[in-house]
Image 1 (cartoon, rainbow over the protein chains, first blue to last red):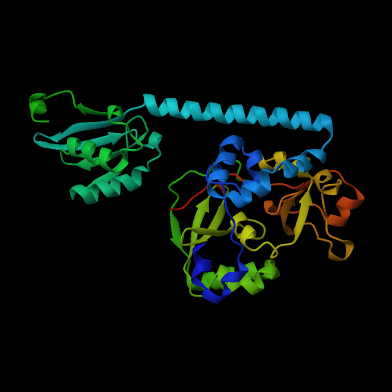
Image 2 (cartoon, rainbow over the protein chains, first blue to last red):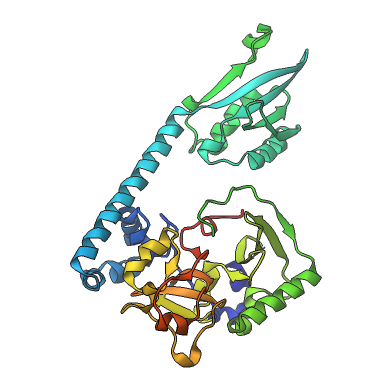
Length: 197
Length: 182
């Protein structure tokens, strides 16, 4: 915690708590998080002391012994259900990510003037507002988050910079967005500039 | 209370220093246990930020570290990370193992979870009134999994272990827990 580290001699009061890198809960609660398997692996890699303490046979047994058999079964069933659900959600997310596209559209404003509209970043966990700001800085143009006609949010960058945006996105967020999922769309009418693009 | 995820992109606003003094005082009045640590938690000079949350709730943060939230009615409630960092600052109760999974999925905490064998309530001399904010630990765990306002006094619960003990708390993995300012 930042404010604790800054306060020098008083530092000792605050407990330093390790949180799981997978489910963000304190590791002792990982078993209730639905991603128990992954959490266990994470802890093994990152904090073996704690791992020894939490996942030793002793600890596991004492956890179980406090419950009656029927309750134990129910808990196990619930946990399995939860895990399945978490896995399902994850799979769905991954699928969504794979199938959805980031669209970069060039829209004509006024004869020779264009704006570039970017839609569909939200699915990849990017925040429109922040990306808009960065784009504005990068290309030294106006860049803002606007609502499209259908109500979804998109980024409008002034100027025809579609290709540059694509390169920039791949450069900066290449890990999140595969190249094949970025498509550049020329706005319908006036296709004469397409060779240039 | 924060069962739903909090939408991202919430804007924070700076708190006036005069207001901040008031908030700090109120926080201390509610939690005498934080008295020794207050200069660490909320230094006098630090700039407090307020973030509006759903349900007319306000979250107070320093930089991006959440400190506590303030519902429209009722006392300020510290964020679980704060509770974890200063485990002895709040009065605590304990729930049995069977109740943990319900708490972590956002259910209302019922009295039997506290009065059964695995649970623990404070002794009679330190009985807690209803309306007190408590940290709830769990059997066999070291850290709190829930903070919330008691709906019934601890002595009442011992006498009649039925009904709601805490509702609308802040639990591990809820919307507020997963809410990050950046």
